[in-house]
Length: 175
Image (cartoon, rainbow, N blue to C red; front, top):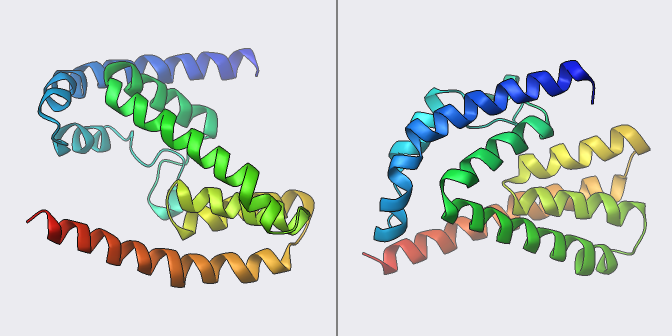
């Protein structure tokens, strides 16, 4: 990283830290104690332009780099222990599942690596994240036709629809 890049990252960190202290920290203890998710801090961070950081601008995000996104996640994690814990567990589980069974079960080759990156995208978001992850690898290392056939079908027709049904069922159980 260049000195200019480090300086820009530190400016972002200061901006995010200030926003998080104003917008998230006052709600964090109350949310942890009540075990109730509060939308107010999330909506306030969105108004500050700190939600959707890694999503490209043409798709409604901020178009930030991975490093800039990590700065945001770190600062939110400092203010809210529950968020930090959730992020740590989610990233750990994603890594475990993608690197061990998915890669091995898909054939331990280049297509399997690209499918694993797509699966990582599913677990961290949606089919769009999966396609973006796979696109980065395909752009750098070449096409992976089997991965591009399997991942969108599994994501769009199985995971997205199944998740919608499961979430709806659980929400109806809590009424």
